[in-house]
Image (cartoon, rainbow, N blue to C red; front, side, top):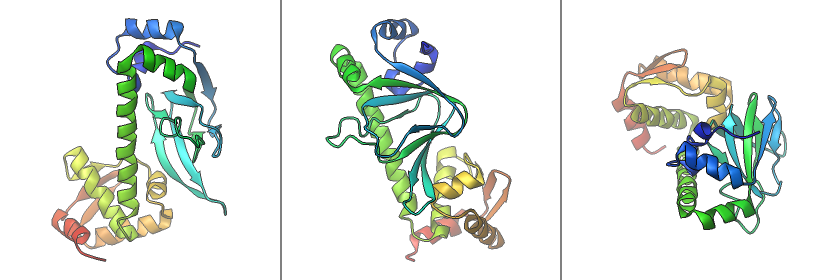
Length: 228
């Protein structure tokens, strides 16, 4: 199965390439494409990272499974996003997490040696690969910021303020379901609902469905500035 060049253009790795250029690359590039079912395990933790994965369609989730059961969703990756790039060239190149298809999805794989050949032939691809690594580092840092914010209430407020800044409005459209959000914050769903209810009762926020309105941004920001 040959990937659509238009889909690959959404991937940072191939950004800036024309359809004609991508067609030419695909003609000589060695790759595989895999169709995945809902909840199918694509990569298991501890597996050797010897290829770059690119999501062509659907959504895949990166899970960290705890030894005692349960786990946390580290990231959700959609069309054009990649996985494996951060560990592919490590000495101990093993996946530190499990990757599961959230629903039906299609994933493209490019082997490590093939990537090295592409980098040697096209330095733009190497630059894009490094840029992709930098973007992933920023994403990880944001996750660390959230988890290190302190109590669950502070993590909730930190996330809401970040989304307000990102969306440019105090009327926020949450990009995650309540279940996904609780996993993102490493919290139980009932605990998240309790904290949201408390913030609402304080008169600091209002919410309906996936829309949250920041009613008193100064109080929310002041809470983040205070020491716990």
